Image 1: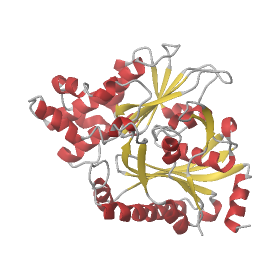
Image 2: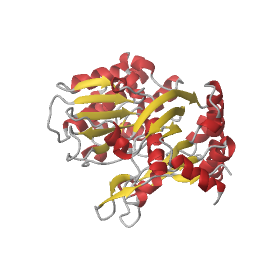
Image 3: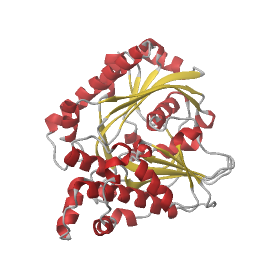
Image 4: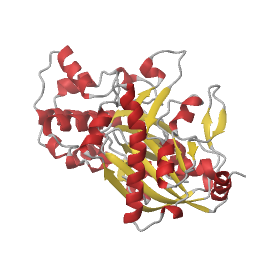
Length: 400
């Protein structure tokens, strides 16, 4: 037997697998690294988050990624090079972080790499019915495996599109098995670059299925405006927005985007919601460009209101539903304040109430997706024919 296949079989048969989950979001700020001990599989899965850290990208990496991310045209040579370069960079970040944690690479069973999304093109974006949903992540898994010496599973979203999904959001697959509660109705809200949520009705066994959807922009517009006008990566604690005033005329025009009127579930990305779109709305409606502080306040309000409206439009049984928030947006004090004001009757809490670092949730999610590929039967997902089937995600890269 091929030694790599034999080792893979051994990892699959272990009771607990030590997996490094990786996530790099649309903000292009860096790499989330979550060291997880994952026990069991399927509905018997449990996760212990051992260590977590975020390693920032340097300026050159951010600029190189921004040239090819969520743009209509990019140089193929740059895409090709960044696919390999980012894989090697992520590998080195992993090795450096493991060394800092005094953990040997040989003691890690698997790396679960989400990669960097550079374009998201579901049918709702490209508009051609006889073409499939599509999404593209870079940061090659073979480069990661070869450089770290650790089995790597990557490119998870392709299987989702292959069976008829849009490639996002995928959080609901893991939320269903880790966070559904017997008696508590829950909404798990993640505010990353794009905001998404999972509705988990109470009950186990014979219960209503989970529902997951994007709601629209999370931090992506706010971050882009802060970088342009304030030369910072993000609005720390919502301080800039707090110093500005909401331009209601602009806000109302932004909320006219057809995405917000589409039925759920749905997905989106910075390909739709970007600063160029905001400037086009200003120009088309002859609205004066607000002061930078007012623009940040308006974009923050857009995120708060569109999330709240999406939640109000959900079908669920209990008005006193628990909302647990993860992602970078949970640290924006003004955004959280406005969310609470727009969701009276909902209990809105930091995701750490469920025992997990809110910044680590998405990296943990991909560790669990990889664990299921290694040791489980797969996640229930509707195929093109709307039939439920068991699906495993990710491509396996051997170190040698």
